[in-house]
Image 1 (tube, one colour):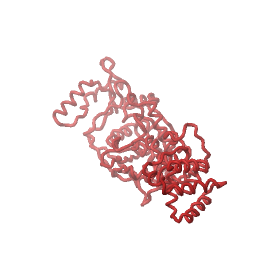
Image 2 (tube, rainbow, N blue to C red; image 1 turned 45 degrees about the vertical axis):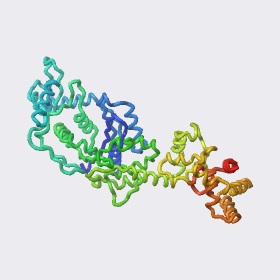
Image 3 (tube, rainbow, N blue to C red; image 1 turned 30 degrees about the vertical axis):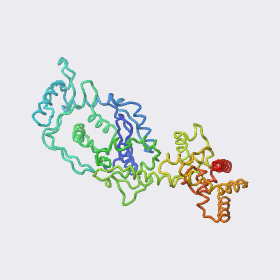
Image 4 (tube, rainbow, N blue to C red; image 1 turned 90 degrees about the horizontal axis):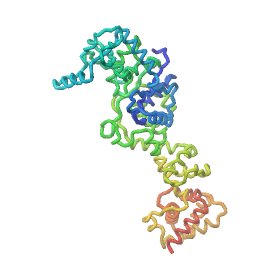
Length: 476
């Protein structure tokens, strides 16, 4: 297999959005393919007709595109491949590797209940295993049969997993499982093998919740005369309480993190570190992940999802981002937060300049958008406590002096504002904060902001004068 081109697949079931576990599986397949100059196939496993929807298919594809996980072939839909499955099922019947089973649902349930009452595991007893009719169903049976695959009765099925290492299954506990239901619909374990054979998949990287399916699938490969792919089963992702990650631990879908203002690069970086490591490095570009990723470095222990660490990582990516690259998403959040109306189209240089002042203190794009409010809107709400402390008779003269100084400036600049403030410090014999804090509260509504010289420069002369006048008049 070493001379063979590596081909992996991400095969989600469209019964929900792209969740964190699925996104990590997609990422590891993507990184393995790119690291080895291989091919990644996207396959939609939509045979569960009751739960699969086109909406979820679109959501999965949308999530992958947002994360930048581009695939090479597909998306293929299993519901469009029925004729292929029929052909493969016939091969197994003709070879005697599968058979028609006429047992009714009531019969099987009675046997299951009996096994339960006797406190023993239930497995199909093979009643129809030796009924022969030349690979054809018994037409006058009055029943619509299922098709079962013949599992070996004795011995073991051994899986050499790249992550779990050697996993042994005793064949005697595995029953003849259904590969085609009575309504003609093929089952999961059957179609994934057919698809993987048909698509030339060499490596299967998936969650370890599929590990128990693997011996059945391996036996199907062997029945078709094919060498099974190499398996790598990823350990599950746990919440902080060490139970399986779920909605009770917070957002679990990729789209939810996008809507909360996370950058795709940050989420990709974080997902890569859930079970994989490279020395002590924490922050990776996508190029570095592709270069350094190997399955040998994926651990077998469950990874714990830490929302605080993801938030920290997101803040790091926001800090390092080109401010102009953030503008489209920031504007989207400005609209969502009702700070601006749809169609808002500011000068990009001005908005980038404003974003730069806030990148260091913003953990998400929502926080960044909310912080931009005092740069953009004319009317600001002054925090009651901040106003009482800094907008009063004691600071009145400082506000007037700053307003008069800015009013005389033909062109506002950080340098000119700085000179004004230092001249006023000397004039009044006070420290910078005694002048800057009242002005900051008057302009931003709060006591925390970027440097006051930057703030005035970005807000601009007209808005600054209006806000200072409003604060001054509130004291009279």
